[in-house]
Length: 54
Image (cartoon, rainbow, N blue to C red; front, side, top):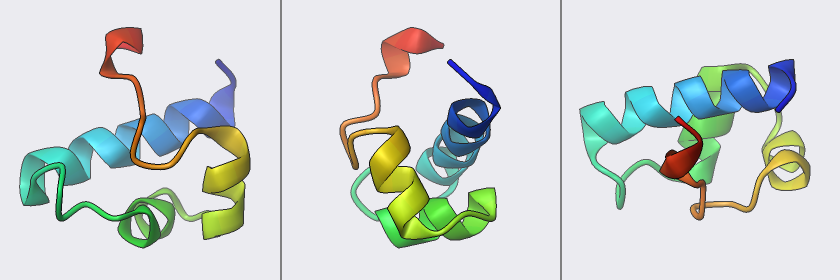
């Protein structure tokens, strides 16, 4: 994984803990990671982020 993926995963994990998986939408994750949603879509499969990586 690269720095972009790490930043997105960190944001996703934070929001999953705060909001739950269902309510942590891709827009919230992208905003938290300070990226556009398009960057998130290109980097990882939306909402199918594998927690097995961490």
